[in-house]
Image 1 (cartoon, rainbow, N blue to C red):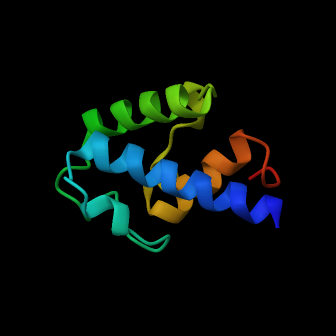
Image 2: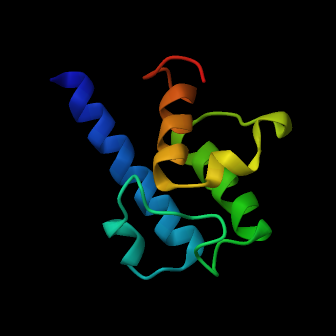
Image 3: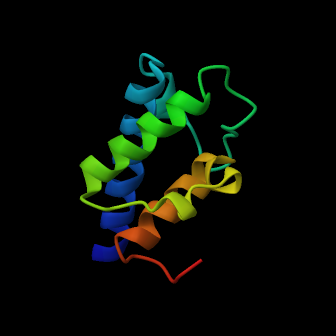
Length: 94
């Protein structure tokens, strides 16, 4: 139960960072794990990726190495969630 609550909280926090970073004015809070990002949202450009990574690092107290940044990481909301969960120790290594 506790693990599920943490996962839900992380999902909400990731959606908030996405929404703020992309300037979606609340639209991003309704995104689902299967919501496509890279190539699907005009707001999601290379500068947004840099800002998203920075926002996630700050929010979750994690570090993302340059070599970890690749296109598939930003394919969907679910891929970003899986990455954050991995970085904070809530899922197995990718």
